[in-house]
Length: 199
Ligand SMILES: NC(=O)c1ccc[n+]([C@@H]2O[C@H](COP(=O)([O-])OP(=O)(O)OC[C@H]3O[C@@H](n4cnc5c(N)ncnc54)[C@H](OP(=O)(O)O)[C@@H]3O)[C@@H](O)[C@H]2O)c1
Image (cartoon, rainbow, N blue to C red; front, side):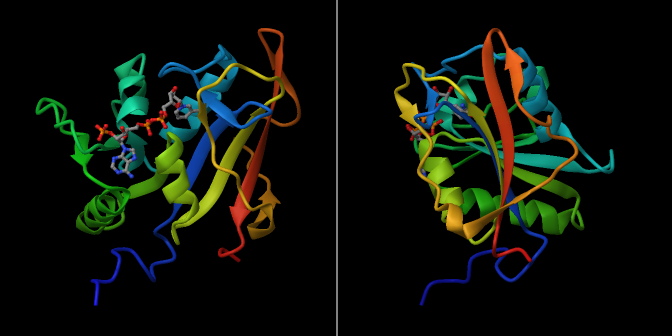
């Protein structure tokens, strides 16, 4: 019999996805974003860094390629960064950076940190790419999907998995830009989906 998954049964152990997709669910091209939407990028950084208490920290989970695509490490310096990779190893000088070999190890590591700090990890964000998003969508810890629909079609080589929308309801979050936004001549809209597992 396998060991119980760390965090199971704890309603406060939740993971949010944040993603921007084009009309074909495209998310990336050649290891980077297919578009330049500075206001959407600002919203993204605001969300993943938002804390109710400055004594707490947020955690992010990403695949190696998404981690390597970070432009400015300062945008992530206060986050506990958990990189899923079977090949890379941590840079020892960053105490907030961890490498793990699976998504299960990522959630287990964050669960241990949260327990050690008496809950001091506030929000856990899943930042992609495709496999990490897929595993988060299948996870019992999935709480919300902050879904930016970029209302154009781009040339993409990486995609967000299909979501079963019957498993979600749409909810409001005042931190999210309301209605259709426009940036660099491209329109986008943010919708927040909440898993029906959370009443
Ligand atoms: N639009 C958006 O919101 C958004 C969000 C995220 C990413 N992106 C884009 O998407 C692209 C990157 O996504 P991607 O799907 O190609 O790559 P990725 O998931 O970021 O990285 C893939 C690598 O991560 C590791 N990995 C991922 N899942 C794993 C698992 N379950 N177990 C073990 N290792 C795992 C492996 O690393 P090793 O090879 O080291 O073993 C794998 O080769 C980029 O273009 C990025 O800009 C866009």
